[in-house]
Image (cartoon, rainbow, N blue to C red; front, top):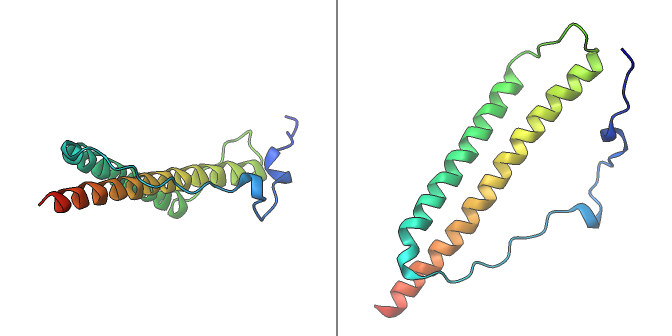
Length: 115
């Protein structure tokens, strides 16, 4: 089987300005009746982050399985990409939880102003 050139070989170690992640926009002030929905979204994002991180830990600790028709380098790359995917998913879930926490703070502040 012929070896394929991977697209990862040309990726630089340092992110360039065009591929850096943009900061989250400031949290808009939600309606006060959204408190239950925001709490559900926060819990959901935290559960997803926990699931991604726990799975990534398991993948790191687990010995790599190698297919018969797979080279050592391809196996390492596939294992690394799987872990990168899980870590990125965990980061996105944490970012979502932080965004939801900002929205919750806005709802609580709005309630305090009315009280």
